[in-house]
Image 1 (cartoon, rainbow, N blue to C red):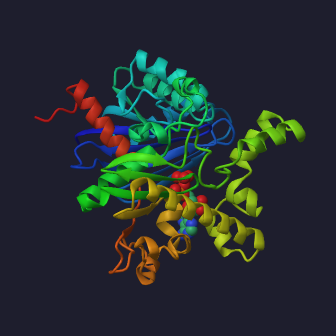
Image 2 (image 1 turned 135 degrees about the vertical axis):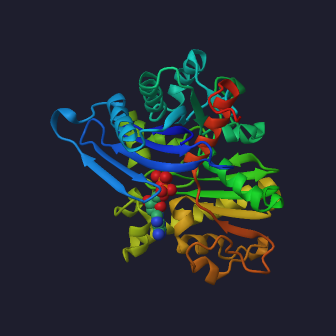
Image 3 (image 1 turned 180 degrees about the horizontal axis):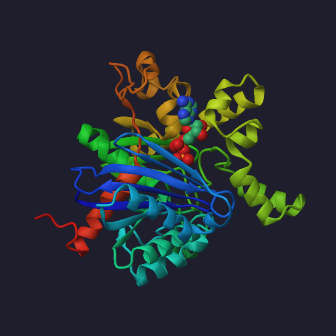
Amino acid sequence: MGDHVITLNAGSSSIKFALFDADGGEWPKMVATGQVEGIGVSPEFEVKRSVDKQKTKRSFSGDDAPKNHAEALEIIIGWLNESFPNVHIGAIGHRVVHGGPVYTEPVRIDPGVLAHLEAFSPLAPLHQPHNLAGIAAAGKAFPGIPQVACFDTAFHRTQPFVNDTFGIPLEFYEQGVRRYGFHGLSYEYITERLRKRDPQAVSRAVVLHLGNGASMCAIKDGQAVSSTMSFSPLDGLPMGTRCGQIDAAVLFYLIQQKGMSVEQVSDLLYKKSGLKGMSGISSDMRDLEASEKLPARQAIDYFVTRIRRELGALMAVTGGVESIVFTGGIGANSQLVRERVLDGFAWAGIVIDSGANARRGEEVISAIGSAVRVYVMQTDEEAMIARHTIAAARLSTSRFQKA
Ligand code: ADP
């Protein structure tokens, strides 16, 4: 077997990983994927090998339970060594939520880069420290192996100033209060796929990444020009548990008039809002689609309405579109949401084929006469990280150099 890379996505209580064969051609080939969840609480390890789809699950009790990211990574490495004894790890790629205003592309991690990434922690206090814990754990487990940071923000750094700022004094922009945008690895992957399929399609496009986290991105000439998420992944569309766009004065009201603490407001807006908070039922679109209850319908109505509004806005940014792409768990799977989002958009040249929209696995769902092509695509952030990691490591080591 040739050289391989590991991708890591470290969250507050989980580490997701994937193992890729670096010689997989245009896109590295995934060999296995899995995660340790519930770190520090009730950890569970689950992995799937790509070749035979064989799944392994393991829960822990007592002393063998991983208490932190480093111990969770040890479990992952132990399994990898056992399952793939001949694999050489050439590099490790990390999903890092925030690259600040600095990083416009992935970067090989060194002490200087690490200092920058630590300095960005206040910009993403719920995510960045965990990403850094993953980097530290991997550094210990794989000393001397190149590590590469791939950012959720980097793809959006091509946004023009007007789509990158808020209407507050510019000194705050200089200090880093910007519309960074997130889901960048997903948008980059989709843009690459779209470009490959039809180079014209990326000249003006809107991509809808609708999952637990949801955002939309306008693409012009293959580059990001505007996004619905901004300073944090809280802005824009309502999501599984996040509120999306909200008047900042609501926060003042909750704190000053209702006596809520900053932590309570943060908890409300990040974890108790969106589809879950509005419906009182679930953050999962499948549950809401199956429910007859009024609040479930209202939550879907609001979700769809906000997407439609942003679609109009982003199409105004690009001056019309050649293509629209649905991706993410909801975008790729919910016939209902896609149908409702694009209903009545014929004025903009968008007409979908209901039959194609209803068929699983159909990549083009626009009607034959539609001026705009509408696509449904699976995103693959891990493959994007793996590809970046191989490229960045190739630049700096001989490990992946082709003979
Ligand atoms: P994440 O943002 O955590 O990566 P995903 O992109 O995997 O999440 O999206 C997960 C969401 O996708 C689920 O919460 C669910 O709402 C939605 N989803 C998955 N399958 C379907 C389906 N068949 N119909 C409607 N929604 C679905």
